[in-house]
Length: 227
Image 1 (cartoon, rainbow, N blue to C red):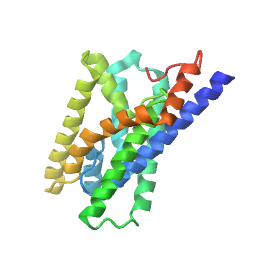
Image 2: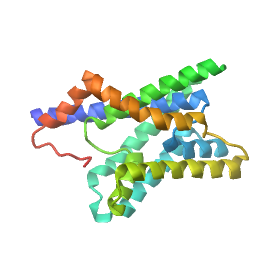
Image 3: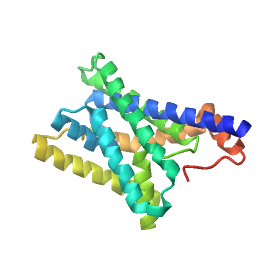
């Protein structure tokens, strides 16, 4: 019973992390300084089609999930199909957050910088909370992990290559569909550099993260789904 309670709490914290991430991504987009690499393709497609950022995020993430199945085949664990549910929550929260933030004035460079900086800190917090429970993967991480497995290259190397590829695709789509650069900017570069470092600081200094991680260690017999 204790293990089941811990597993439920781990999934609850994972959901909190996903929601924080969604809000942070919407806030960074609101700053208009450039979205993160993982979101830039969806942002460009949203601008080109008139569909919402969240809707296109859902589509792109579904492609990531399909890619995992195609790459891993029999090694794709059924539990990871919960990424579809995660994707629904995540994408919906991006649109809800964007609607709320549309009322927040971000008209000056200072306001943009504040919104962007706060977004990066919240994104790092969301990522740290999302990873600590060690349950399921999010689609963006899942596809990189799948590429890592089949290519036998370090995860960090594949992550950098994958993110760079997304930025290039976003730039090409911007030029072809919009004849201007959308979504990719100085913020794209800065977030790629600073968010991971903030995550490292939070992991060392935030007691909450140690508590969440301890739920995994103390859940004797609980499956390590994200591995």
